Image (cartoon, rainbow over all chains, first blue to last red):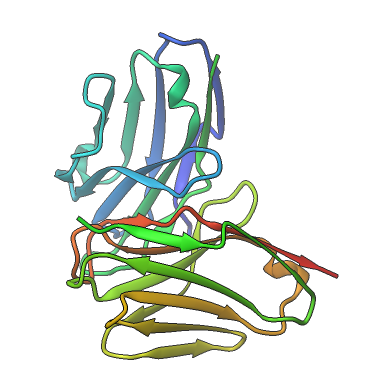
Length: 113
Length: 114
């Protein structure tokens, strides 16, 4: 079974530029999450989708971050404009509906200079 | 919402020794407690979880114990091996219960010395 796919794996941008990350969850998983992991910390939830609807985006900085999950499968996370403090690994995870287990991708590492 | 505290932040053991990592949580409505292992450059991976209807769960060399009264749960790794070296995270449901998104502890970096 293929795992959660993310791209790009690494991205370096200057502050105030924009960036987009893509995630393809495990086939059949209804729930998709984006987490932000700053170096030395645990993952922090940004947004949770169930199918193509948003379940929880209470911690998403909506002035600069946006995410969508069209057709309830792939998802993109965009940051515009980026700030230095956005430097982190952006982890996508998926889970079957009514399951507690999260399956994570390898993450996209963002460096903002 | 839930709050999870994890200790210690770093742990170094000799190969063959045991390692214990402890977490506390705040929301008495939480009843699902997973542990994730994250190797360098990879995403976290579930290694064991426990639900509140049991006090202990084992899977080969790893075990998790839960004390609902005290609101804490622990990960125990016995006969540690170098490949156990990684960062370990405890977690709990952000809004209590047993499903939904997770809030993670800050992690414990475990180093197993050969």
